Image 1 (cartoon, one colour):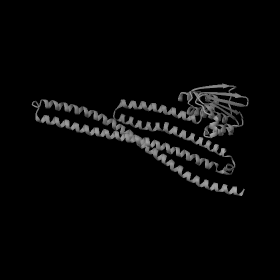
Image 2 (cartoon, rainbow, N blue to C red):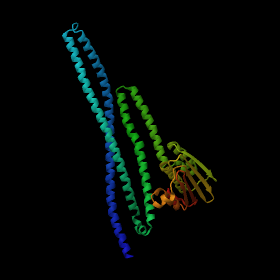
Image 3 (spheres, rainbow, N blue to C red):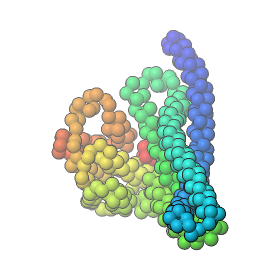
Amino acid sequence: MEDKKIDVNRLETILNKTIDEIKKSKSQLFEIVQDTRTEKEKLLQRLAVVQQEIKEIISKVDQLDKEYYHARKKLSEFSKNFKVYSEGEIQKSYEEAYQFQVQLFLAREREMQFKNNRNDLQLRLKSIDLTIERAENLVAQVGVIFDYLTKEMIKIPEVIESANLKQMFGLKIIQAQEEERKRVARDIHDGPAQSMANIVLRTEIAERLLNNQQIDLAILELKDLKAMIRQSLVDVRQIIFDLRPMALDDLGLLPTLRKFLPEMANRVGLKTNLAFKGRERRLPMGMEVAIFRLIQEIVNNVIKHAKATKVKVNVEYRDGHIKVVVQDDGVGFEKEEVMKKKKNFGLIGMKERIQLLEGECEIDSKRNIGTTIHITVPIKEGGENNSESTG
């Protein structure tokens, strides 16, 4: 027994040192992400300026090309009738044509330089986007490890005595939470945040156009801004719904499913059908959240992996329990093979969460036919806390 305590103390010492290093690494990675985002914003601003300069130089090149054409035409006419015109007139015409030629050459050189600069900025922006994505992935991974170690350290004796499978489930649940946070952060960054940055740049362009009395172009820019703002509002509302559907708190499970499934169908082109049996009533809030999240996770997995064309969701309220059946017509899989290899942590984690609800889960899947998942959960009026933790 004494040896076991020594082992625990040694493990705590190692974990404390590891946590300190991970914390430093997480902070450094976050600074890298922030610096890279700042650099990206600067590049976007420079790109907007360069694109405006390209637009202006192209207009100038077109004007010079026309003037050079008229000058050459005039010079040709003088050359054909050199007896009619004086030597001074011919010389002046030649010098004008030459000046236009030089200006046109220089303008085209500037146009080429601006375009090369634009291409270089676009390549650098692609590279920065890749760097940000990789850094964010690393931050999320480090965050999973850091949170797990700090939260679970007080349970080290119990963890050592528990089964390896329980440890794996605990880590995967935390990792799933972190993945969800990362997804939300990415959705905000790629959606509303990018739109807001673009709106600022487009506003500056519209302001410049108004200052230059280019009213028609300014109106077009403002119309585009209006459309971008509307789309940003749609994106924000979708993110809010994904985080916590307000209908779930106000109306309950079934009305939320009636809203969620058609919206998901419209978004990804998947046919959905919701059927209900029994007496519709409100369940404990934590249970409604947990069951909705399970259905949401199953439908998302169908979209990602099943290659299905339709999904059916059946909900049945029975005395003392609720039954949910989700059926798709996707590619299916061999359940025994997947569960034996323990590679599908989504299925394993889902079954673990259903067990935490004291429920049961059955999975029936056949290749090229589809998958049906049966979930049965007892309704416990006092089960708010346990149920809430699984959502």
